[in-house]
Amino acid sequence: MKQVIFTATILFSLFTGPVISQNSANRWEKWEYLVGEWKGEGTGKPGEGIGTFSINKDLSDKILVKKGHTEFPPIGLEAGYNHDDLMIVSLDFNGNPNQSIYFDNEGHTIHYAIVYTENEIVFTSEAIPNLPRFQLKYQKLGEKKVNIIFAIASPQSPEEFKTYIEGKSNKIE
Image 1 (cartoon, rainbow, N blue to C red):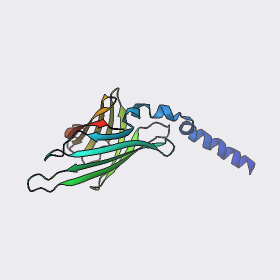
Image 2: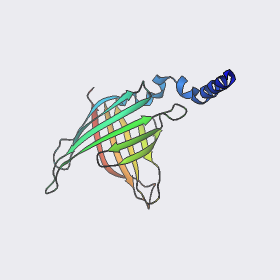
Image 3: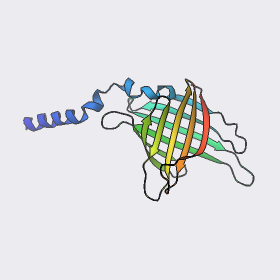
């Protein structure tokens, strides 16, 4: 019995070692400037939403949680509406933050792979036959300013993303 427990412990440590031993400060290094509270530059005038979002570490620095709220005013006869979303950035098996899942009050659930460049964090959904693809970019414009681009690619051209909405936000905390 002792040998079974010993073997199980060794196997567990081999398979979970990279995640457990990774330095939590380094895993979120490319995210540090985004952690906090943000306010969009929109004014809330017709055709221009006004919103806020936050990104915070949670679960002992094992995940990031992004929550957003945007209010879109009425345009002509079209009623205004609110958009709320939640995104969780999680670690892969090796302890790298390169995957996320997104939910919103419109009923969307999107699984994203994450790629990092010097000044961008790019989320891209997987290609699923007959469904659009989505791409979300956070472009660092300074320590307290970011440009956000949400783009969509049609099922017929899944690599050709077209900007759907774009806006700048400023860090308030």
